[in-house]
Amino acid sequence: MARGLGRALQRAVSREGTDVDLEGEGRSLANARRRQVFRYLCLRPCARIGDISRDLKMSPATVRWHTWDLIENRYLQSEGVSVFPSGLIDPRDVPLFAALAAAGRAAVLAGVSAVPGLSLQEIASRVGLTRQSVSKVASELVDFGLVRILDDGRFRRVEPTGLLARKREANRARAEAFGEALLRRLSDEALAPELVRREETTLLVRFGTSAHRVLLEVPVDPYETSWKPSV
Image (cartoon, rainbow, N blue to C red; front, side, top):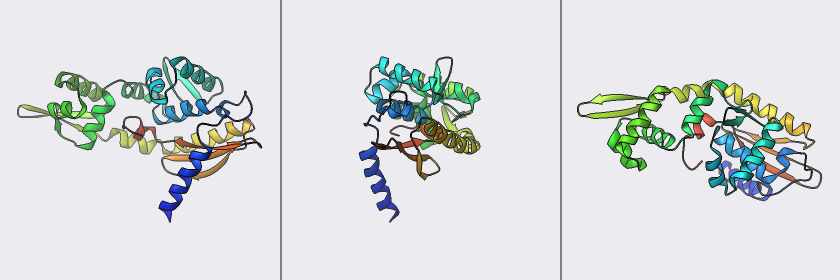
């Protein structure tokens, strides 16, 4: 039954999801592309404009425009060049998320987390980088406390520290407050939000006008999703 419900919700999201513009130019998340940008940054806070542009198949100028609007309307906030959902992450972790947005770092962390104790050469083979590049990335991840490097004879092996899991657990209350603030902002925009489902990692929200309503799945677990592929 639960599996059937999941499929039903997926069909509903596809019907009411990311490709429909609602009435009202002044309503930030009434715009379909803006919802896509917002959702992407919930998955991957501090993602780079070029990566968002590539993955969402939008021009960099379009991504910048929608990002600016979302900042102006308090859905996003910025720190230097980094942009992230307002209230979703600990601001002290902005450098960490910005680091994971850089090429190679997320891939190395994902590889090490999947198979702890891999050698630098084994990681390089898995992620398609040179051993020298993996060594540099691994050292950077050590600086953030995300992995440790162990000497094993002539090999140097890498394993995760569990820091992200601890940060993820500590962020649960913040993620819940983020969801409540999102509903209030949608209500302030007269989009009559309805919380359809709350799960540990996502919120499913329906909102819109009398003419049309949409469903938006909002990721709220960036400490888990920001560094994993195919999210």
